[in-house]
Length: 158
Image (cartoon, rainbow, N blue to C red):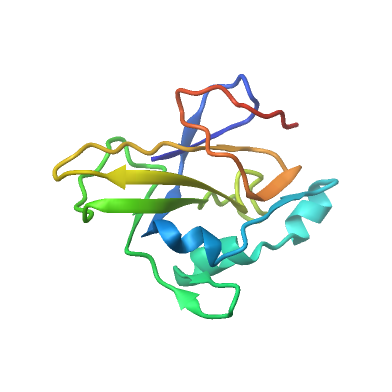
């Protein structure tokens, strides 16, 4: 379940999030990048190829141009009040959590962001709770640091 927050010290609210589980070897095949925007106008025109590919097609584009499908993916709506139970094969994964926060008619400042985390499923069943927080800011987009709901931000943002 993903979260968003208006400031580093604000309460966190639910944020629709799509989680994609890829083999742990994936990071050497894709180019993740963090971006900054000077103002809201620049942010509204911004694009990130990884965010777009995952959001629209559910795949990653490798550096060599090939498409990489996730082993598993799950969408969690901001309206969800409980964690779901899913079955994922034992193994090591890189999880891409993609913000699906939408604010019509304009892009939400919690949108256009994704974060990544390595996880290991050692046995079945096992409990894995993923709760990344997306900052509501136009100043950054693309790859952002993964911050769990119970963690303080390790970086500053405006």
